[in-house]
Length: 507
Ligand code: XMP
Image 1: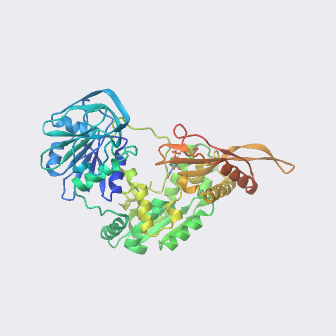
Image 2: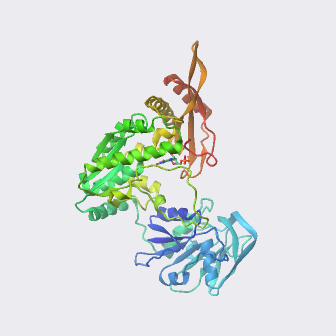
Image 3: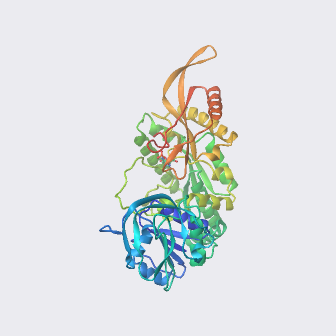
């Protein structure tokens, strides 16, 4: 495997994804975390950072000790730190360099195999390396910086530094460079594939769980379904899945998801708890209050169900890597915008050992493993759906009637997205029921009915998003479909806010 030491760069996860895409397993750890250099460790990558190596408390690691054992690659801050630690000089650039630059290759090196002269790379730094340590040589330059890539000439293992960010999309051959580091420099065997992951994980789960039983809350989402399928392949019906109908799911979703679970051979119990959720939510209008009640009701129901499965000593969860990576905070903690509820948030007091088969996977990798396991395409490529469901898409208080109305509107919206082949082009879409009525006319009749807003966004990870520029022709079609088919709605509007400053969900 490869270790990526994170110095707090916003791009660290992109390095990990580039490594994984080359079918090489890697992990991200904070730079200050202790680790052992075991025989399966093939190389170390040092990430970028918002800090300057000349800051008083600049984050640092013992690069010289690492490179005694394995090859090392420093990226941006990682490269500057390396240069400084070995006796080079790093200082403020005369020109801050952000964005596009072109590489001039000075020296032929395996690391640069297949990289073209003039290759576009992406810079984002305000310090630069002024002089290299003794025994280092320049591999590449750009117009404005003399040391864009360097290498340590001799030593137990190769040591490289790149001033630019090979991991970002705009470094057009950056992935090739990372690939070269993995294959030409670290000699990694590229055998980490969805199939090998699934097989190894099932074997590992068999050993870890032994004869024990596992309970698990399922949500119908990608992560919990893939995790449950892996566990089920390891221990069969000793996996006890629980899927709760909170009355806030999409139209017909409860039954459809149960059918898929049955088809996958999962032992899952469907629990109809609609009334409990509706009575808990009665008259609540504050978004946080709604979220809290839903989270709590869910835990109560799960714990009650868990009582019936006394033999269980493990709790299965669909946790994925972005939830696990310890963020290396160099700018203090962030504030809570929304208190998230999802099926992973079960209390520690349940005294169950955790099994989290997807703990080290990114979302797209989870989907690829899902394909490998034969999980239906429609489930794997469904849009994200929030744990509190339609409750945070109905502004104001929740009633079963409003839920039914929104389910219908959502049904026609989703169907139209699929019919127009737009569903998989947007990252997430949904309808929002607004707490206002307006006047309309249908036939010769006056109507005074509800409004729904349509939301569709493009995004990579949900952290930032842009509103999807859906064709007018499509919007006009959905508007007609909803107003003509859903009694109680006489107006449809389209949300054109990006995130930030808006969020994806309205509550
Ligand atoms: P926001 O509205 O914060 O949403 O821009 C970002 C992404 O998170 C989803 N979301 C949730 N997911 N439990 C979840 O599992 C929640 O409580 C929750 N709230 C928001 C939202 O649908 C979007 O994909």
